[in-house]
Length: 249
Ligand SMILES: [Mg+2]
Image (tube, rainbow, N blue to C red):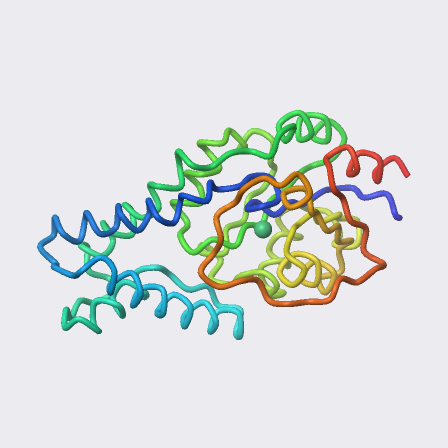
């Protein structure tokens, strides 16, 4: 492969995982705040309505590439129980904030990640593009994990308004990295968002299956990733050592 001049990484299930309990705790936190705000809904039916709304909005986001936000899902779920609140309502903002607070203690780096980034960081500028519906929450997760010092640039889909694989988010990334697209290697676990997206943007994709291969338990998103066939001309790594070896090849 062509020696890259910069390396980009996805975040979730590439550099880190969220513990499988995260979603359950997030839901409980969200329910607690709704209750404090005197918005009375039963946890179970609300959870179901919330999930249905989430899936609907995430499907639309997959279709047009525009990022969605949890406040829309909460507002729609509340609406189905007769609570008419705008997605901009500060009570919803508080509930969403509480939801994401479950991610901070439950986020863990893949073993060896800091060592890898320190080593690569001496040779390449590093960047990150993460699909995450909430900008401040994504920034906080990255901060808690201590990842900021390693990256020249971090792009969050919520802040850009578009999510991977939309070309717009990759274009912003290339510009920010100040390295031509075809000299950037992009490492991610999602065949559609990361592999197809970075390839369409002219980068060299690398698929990571480190999380699955090391059987690291990870939280599932409401909607499973878009099904894609694995293009066998794309390198796949199963450990961080595989990535170092690939860069030596
Ligand atoms: Mg990922």
